Amino acid sequence: MGVYEIQEATELGSGELLTGLVREFHAAGLPLNARSNAYEASRLVKAGPGVLFGLSGYNSKGSGQWIQIHDSPVLPPEGAVPELILTVATVANFSVLWALPGRVFQRGIYLVNSSTGPTKTIGSSDCWFDAQYI
Image 1 (cartoon, one colour):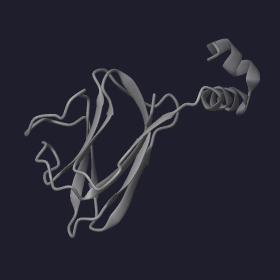
Image 2 (cartoon, helix red, strand yellow):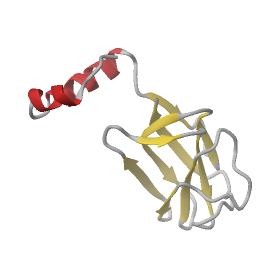
Image 3 (cartoon, rainbow, N blue to C red):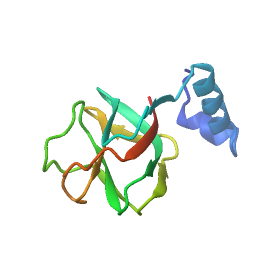
Image 4 (cartoon, one colour):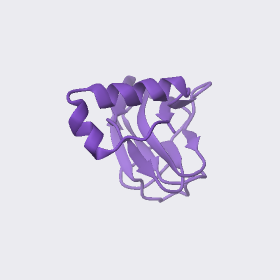
C-alpha cells in the first residue's frame, strides 16, 4: 500500500486521501472477512495482532444477549473481561463500524456471545458473525 504523510492529507483536501486509501485496500483484496458458516457461540477473527474495521451479525436467540470482542488469539476463558461489549435484542441484527484507522487489537480478535456483559459467560450456538479486518 502507498505511504501517506500528514502533509499530503492537508494538501489533498476533502476526501481524496480517504478515496486513495480505499482504492489501495480494494486493489490488495482488503479488508479480509471472517464469517460464520452456521450459527455459533464464538468466532476467531484473527489469531495475532490486527485491526478490526467492523462486524455485523444476527442473534437468533429468543432473548437478548451480549456480543463481546476480546483481544485474544484463542477462545477466552470463562470470566474474561472483553475489550468491548454490544447488547443485542432478541432475534435481531447487530453491527458496528469503525472509521479508518479501525480498532487495533494487540494479541488477536475473538468474538463471543455471552449471557453477561462485563465478563464472558459463553452462550449457545445462536449467532451469525461477519467481521472485516486486516
